Length: 367
Ligand code: ADP
Image 1 (spheres, rainbow, N blue to C red):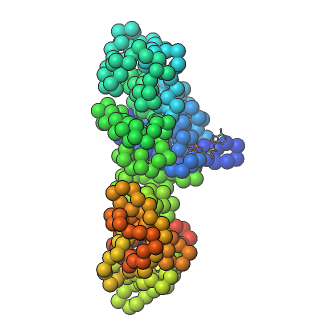
Image 2 (image 1 turned 135 degrees about the vertical axis):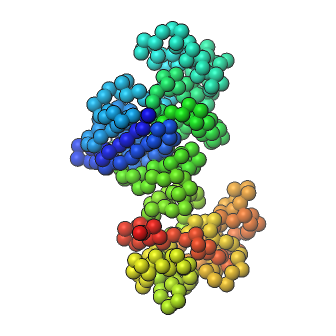
Image 3 (image 1 turned 180 degrees about the vertical axis):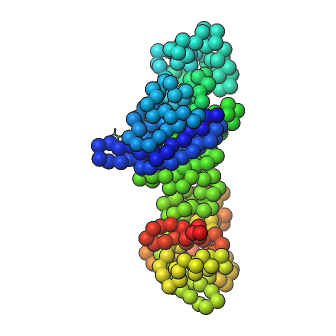
C-alpha cells in the first residue's frame, strides 16, 4: 500500500504561513492533481512530500509510515520536474540509468529496467542520443523514464508539461494518464492549469492562499463547487456571478437583479428558505453554457446586447451587456451571431449556483 497522507501539514517561512493546515489522503494507486493559481502553495506541498522542503508542522505518512524526518532518497518516491533536469552530457540511456547506478543496482538489473522503460515510452531508438538532440516531448519522456525505472511507491510531478507547446501538451497529458494507469503508481501531480487538472485527475485538490478549498472528482468540483473561488477557477470561460436579492412571492422565490426576475426551482427555494436567505442579498452563479442565446421561454430571461464575439470554430463565446456594469459570458453553438445583436437570453435555473455574500460558500450544499 502506498497511500500518501498529510495531517495538519503547514509550511512557514519566518512568520508567513504559505501552506495552512493541509489534510489530504491520496489513495493507493490514485492519480490526484493539486491545482490553483500561482503562489497558492502547490509546489511547496509537493516538495514537502518529496522531502525537498522541511515540514513546519503536522505529519506526512507514505504507506502508513511517518516520513517527516526521512531523507528524500529514502522515501521511495520519484519526482518529475518542469525543466526535466536531464544531464546534458549523458545520453538517454545514461540519464535513465544514473539514479539506479547511484543506488548500486547491478548492471543487469539496470539494463533490464532501462530497456523496459524505454519500450513503454517509445524511446528504444533514442537511447544513444544526448538531450540536446531530442524534442521537448522526447525530453519529457526521458524525465518520466528516469522516474519509472526506480519503480517507486509514489510519483510526484511538478508542472511536467508546462514547457511544451499546446498540441504536445494535450498529447502528453493522455500519455501520462495512460502510463499511470498501467504502472498503478500513486501519483501527485501539480498544475496551475484547470483543464489539465480536470482531464487528468481522478480527484482534484483545489488550493487557494495555502489552503485546500475542495477535494473531489472533476465532475463533482464542476457541478458542486463549494465556494465562489472554486466555482470561478474551474471551468472555461469562467462562471458568471451576479449579486442580487431573493424576493418572497409566497408560492415562489425570485432572484432579482438589474430588473431581471428569475424563479428558483423547488430544491433551491427549499434551501434558501431553510437557511433564511429570503429577503437577503446573495451571489447568483451561472456557467456560460447554461445561458441560452435567443431562447423562447417566457420565464427566467433577460434582454442583452452582444458586445464581443469570440469564435472558437465549433462555438462562440458571447460577451453581453444589459446587466448594469456587468458583462455576461455565454457559450453558444450559434456561431452566426454578430456583434451588436439584441437577443433574449434564457437562464437554465436548474444549473444555477447560489452563494453567501460574506462567506462565499455554496448555499445549495448546506446541510
Ligand atoms: P505554487 O506552486 O502554487 O505556485 P509555491 O508553493 O511555489 O506556489 O509558493 C507558495 C508561496 O510561498 C508563494 O507565495 C511563494 O512566494 C512563497 N515561497 C516559496 N518559497 C519560498 C521561500 N523559500 N521563502 C519565502 N517564501 C517562499
